[in-house]
Image (tube, rainbow, N blue to C red; front, side, top):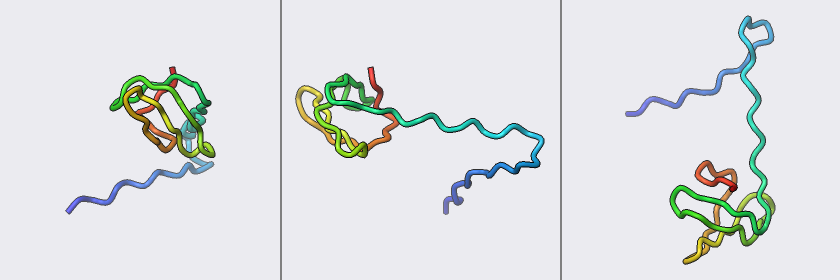
Length: 75
């Protein structure tokens, strides 16, 4: 049996330690942006659907990827 995943710790205002840094804003993609994916390689954004998913053309095939995606990087 696996242990339950640890929950994120909340910051107390009276803590002597610094608060955690804010999360970076999610990357914004536009049509015709060139991207790279760890599994599929180099591609170009074909369409953006409500900032929740992207359709990317990787040359041999098109893939729909939901955002944010840790394996996807804008070039």
